[in-house]
Amino acid sequence: MKAPDCFDGTQPFKVRSFIQSCQLIFHNDLANFSQERKKLLYTTSFLIGRAAKCIEPYLSNLPNQDSNYLLKFWNLFEYQLFTSFGDPNEVRKAEAELDSLRIKEGGHVSLYIANFRSLVSRIGDWGERGLIHHFRKGLPSSILDHLAFHP
Image (cartoon, rainbow, N blue to C red; front, side, top):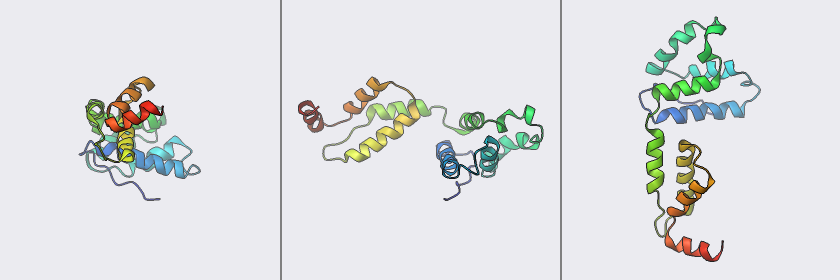
């Protein structure tokens, strides 16, 4: 499995793909990444530039595990990366994109579904009813007509 690309923290849209690449490796090799510390140290080895500078103080304090919360818990580390380097308006942008997402007549439903799922993964929990509403809203009338007769 390919190692993740290095992350320098200069492009907010890359933080999500960086984290996902690391998580794929963890899930693919559970034996080597069963401990939080191994996940964190592996991930930090791919940080460069601004991102590495942000983590540097924690790495220098690595032996003192009690005060080194960031490199002790994956969830905190992931949150810190998103907070420091991610797009602060990611959720709002995804909501706006979802609101305007449409499949054109003759368009590919599979592409619409993939785009819909990608946006939903960035938004969080809207509840099933809200998601169904937005999903149907983006469908062309020909598909909605078909669904009306074949629920």
